[in-house]
Image 1 (cartoon, helix red, strand yellow):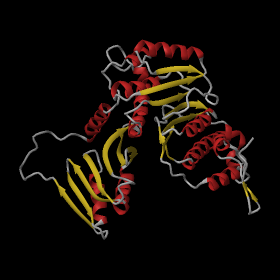
Image 2: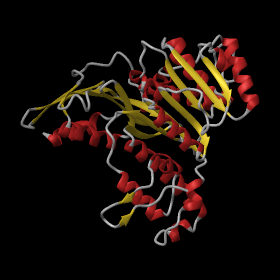
Image 3: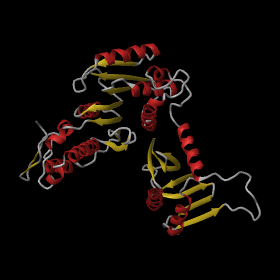
Image 4: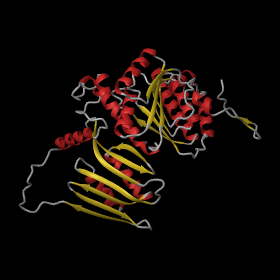
Length: 410
């Protein structure tokens, strides 16, 4: 039966797919339901999986081969039922308590001599329609004027996107998709405090306020923080102009900011180098429920990394620089896991638009990952002392065993 399902998925995972639902979970606390739909990304057909876990929703985009493996794995380990609908037919898979799978495939057939009422669409026309449908799912839609987007030069007064700013419009909506995913973590019965470190011109800060406060009705207070006084002045003028009473901007440093004692959500977008680490450390100490971070300019490890085995690789500057950035973000994610956060590294915006395309999304769960030993072994292997490790993993002697763990202090 597994082969029958695999063959059916190969047949139906194309532009004619209408959707797949995987349900009847074996462990509802771990994963409740998964929905899959076709989307077009960069003119390529993908399948977007929405994972419903507790009060959260997480997204991942897969190609056809990955989607087939993903569905098969879910039915093997987590889900007991799959329902697939396509313009070409349907597929249902049921898994019994003993693990036996039953698969029913029904293909739509045209009766002999029957002619279709509508001319069939070409594959390219179907992909274009999917791409059009995807554009309608933008959180901030084209055609609806949004005042701050008009003033920031992204939209015209009629709500049309300025052609040269379309990438910024997509970036804003992509960010709001991540915010949308964590809405269940925000308490609508009380004011939610959000801090945006290194807010800059604040395209995304204004978008977040508009979406959460104006569209979704959440009682929120957002604080934007940046070192550029002129930028802060301009942002406060815009906030006052729009009547955004609980959106304020301040001149200040990430590491030294003490303006609040409790924060629910911390956002740090393109804070340079270790500024990201200090923002993450602040978020952890505040006990923030949600962290959204897009790191930038990870120079620290690039100057520290040394390893005889990897010297032939580190010899190439551009390779060492990229490896340093990847090691930095991976270790940041592991440290956050150690502090009780479920952490994901996600693509923020397409690589063709910016190389700074990794977003760290961390949601506080409370259960700490027992990975400190592994983190220290990696830092010892690379001869590095990452800022976030220095902030959150203090120096300790491995007493009783005569061993010394790597030091993170300066």
